[in-house]
Length: 465
Image (cartoon, rainbow, N blue to C red; front, top):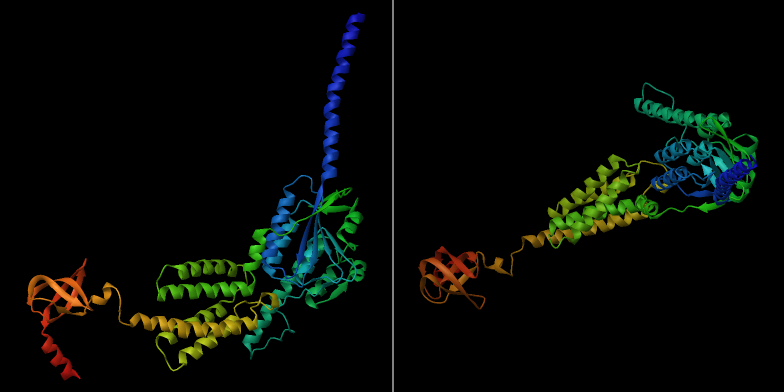
């Protein structure tokens, strides 16, 4: 009995030791995950456009795909941006399963217009001291709406459209405020009256949750607090977490470059002029390839930007009129009209009031001058050169007059510009006779059946004079 009791005791100790090792290993693994957890630090600086939207959406999606991300932190310093880009960013924030905190940072920064919407969408809203937010009125509503009038249906339609845009913006920001339990009344004023607040005022008005001077200070203040994600309360455990700055990669930087309105405008013109040059003067294809690539990149960039189709149409009409002026001079009618259409179309190419998404006026003036010089002089010169008589190569021999070296019928020899050529003639020709070349086969000239005696030709030329 004592022997069996000893065996059972040893087996129990062995099982306890075996089970203790995985538990200890799991505890160490969990502790290591907590220690190694990182908080992605994303940044919005400048106008919000397609590049910023692409960068934030991809980084938020990447953070949600990882298991040990306790929080995403976004710093804001923006004057506003495009509505489509804002909506894409907020959709990504609202669907995130990882809490997202937004901090208006550094001191002197602002979260104006679109930045206010993003701040309201985040799970945690914070501001550094000496920062501001607000002025979220849609930028195409720049004046008080005119009263409806039967005498001016155009003003009535414009007023109705402004009301629709304004009411939609108010409803959108109120829905965000109600979702995050923040001040919905002030949010409406920020849209309807362009109201603004400082950091301390925003904290007192329940527009933001925290005032923090730096991202590190915000992490410390958020440690242990609770946030609501998809109607579930989650506690933020941010002990010993590390901030990992996520800068835009090459894709976002390339997108930011081509969606710059000035760059997209230049690429479009390079594409159009490159294809025109290739059409007028076919060669090794450098102009055509460059123009095709530039035009495709420009088209991709333009479909991401708020393009005004009327402006684009005027721009293309201006180029067409300038081309017509180079082909058929009209005493400046097509040239002046084309220049006017080109400039007006360039100014109204992008349908937005944001200066960050408009083509620079000095650039428009410079491009207009270069375009006039290029089209009127360069393309005009190439077009006129195409009509000139060919003076080199075998093409020069077609319809040229050659001198018969010796009498022959069938095969013989002729002289052209001091060179002796083999020739075929179905009619008899005599030495010194001038005969016209009909075609070339290899290195043999085929002569026309109609021949002219050199003396007769000289007399004919004399009578013509």
